[in-house]
Image (cartoon, rainbow, N blue to C red):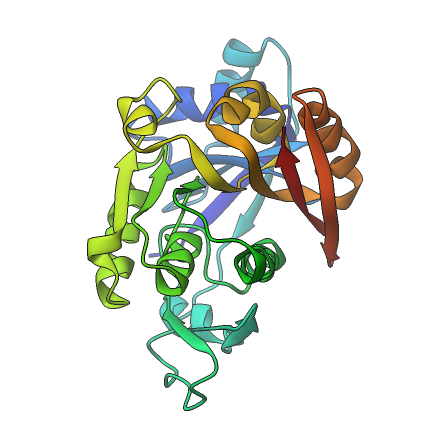
Amino acid sequence: MSLNQISVPLTKEEAYKLVDAVSELEDMALSAVAYEGPDGEHWVFEATCDEKPDIEKFNTLAKQVLGDDVEFEVAPVPDKDWVAHSLEGLKPVEAGGFYVHGSHDDAPSDENVIPIKIDAGQAFGTGHHETTSGCLAALDLYLQDNTPEAILDLGTGTGILAIAAAKRTELNILATDIDPKAVEVTIENAEINGVLDQIIAETADGFDHPIFAEHGPFDLIMANILAGPLIELAPELIKQAKPGATIILAGLLTRQAEDVIAAYTAQKTTLLAQSEKGDWSILTLKAE
């Protein structure tokens, strides 16, 4: 099968509108996704097709949905062993006293590091991205001086942060995500890492879900998502925090940090630390 991808930069709202429209038509594409572009300003609509995309059909649909013409780009997807390719360069990562590795690598012999086995798959968070390793380092710093009673991993992805917290504490960790697949992956990874009985994994698309009231408020909240959702969620996220709680935020580019910090200081939090890894920032804040 020869795969092709068709893409175009749009606003977030436009990208999701086009994804919804394409997804309703079974014969247009194998899949359609929207994601934040590398510049952090635009979003990208991207569809994968099992043959050369019908540009005219995509143009017509875009005109109907968005009200204007757009300039699609089409590129072939190279033939590769994608499993092998995904593992290339995914060497073990050490961060915050944790040793994150895939099943293709051996666990460490060093007893001073905590192993976490996470394979690349259908959810975000293998430890290789700067935001994830940065969160692990921030978690380690927090646990050096604090003994929390309740921890929330919001937007858990693969469950890596919840698993790390579980391995460092004897607590039950609440790990939530809006994506049911991410929750399935989190449960699988928790079992692989021997902390299944400590991970409470739940699909929750808003703080009105009863799971938050059942297990909160929290001494530590970790949210490695994106700048836009972090800003939007600020008022409700802070309501989940105990007085004096620590909040670790990631998934934001360094140039977006000022806006995220402003959103949370408006909710009466204080910035304790800002670390940078590559183009990304990790924020540690304290609630009043």
